[in-house]
Length: 97
Image (cartoon, rainbow, N blue to C red; front, side, top):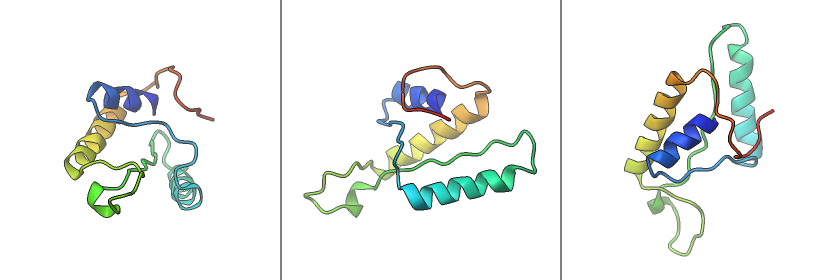
């Protein structure tokens, strides 16, 4: 998670670790995935919460958003980093349990 955050920063794509990104549905999806993967030792999984695309928001909104091209690149960076990383970085950014 934190290696992906650092890779996104290096690519100049804004990102942060969130402790509250869509609590119920996001947690349900994540824990459902982890439950499904329990029978596949060594298989990693995760959940990436992406912001809105600017056109999805009303003009006066202050919600975070990224253009589709930048969202696509961000997801590619996260996937590449995840595949290349076996031990996460130890940097201050949110918390893992």
